[in-house]
Length: 288
Image 1 (cartoon, helix red, strand yellow):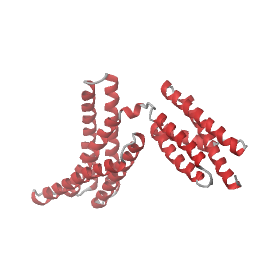
Image 2: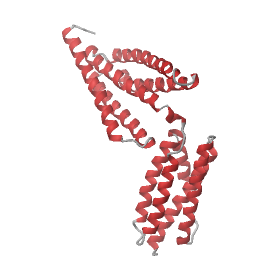
Image 3: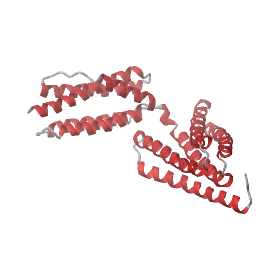
Image 4: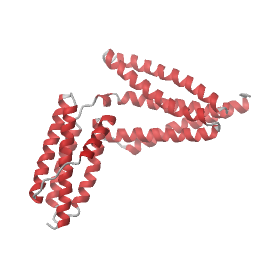
């Protein structure tokens, strides 16, 4: 191998030893025995591939302490499943960019492919509690995006006073978040324990309330109601994008289908409500 190929293998080696220390750190951090076993298996695999590359390079490589800390922080904020699957996708792209610079790379590529397939299977076995409540979060987000964005769009044309619209949105949003949380509790209580039902209701209520806050904030600070309406639609798109990106990575689902479906429903209902607000103001004589 020439110098360029050795450099690429050393980079692969560094990635493997970094991953080894990352998964060891995650293993020590989790209390779940199933997840701990999975992290230990992945760490062992990473070390075995590190040793394979070492036979080619005849050198030891130190891990990246920065990446270990950075990846570990991501998993703390966004959870194991989403973070590790996203990290794996990024690492796979980096690995294959290094492999391309190696002339006779079929053996190396096969090693990497086998390792990535095995790691993907193991990552799918991670049991993360927050993912058990995805349906509750979806319920809160969907209802909030549809109901509150539609209500604010209607209020925007009917009332045309930003501060009043914000207060009305805050009152109706607060009541709706409590109502949907209670409904989720009673619905889940029929199927599961009181503790699980309470957690589901909290996830639903909090996700609903979070979207309400995001949607009404511009109305408190900006007097131009139509500018606020544009910001409202932008926030709806951003929330839908981020949520579906998270789900597509964590649950290995189609991003495009879910994204466009939610956008179509949310914006269609908001536009209908805007039309209702127009009718109320013009033909029913509402003046504020």
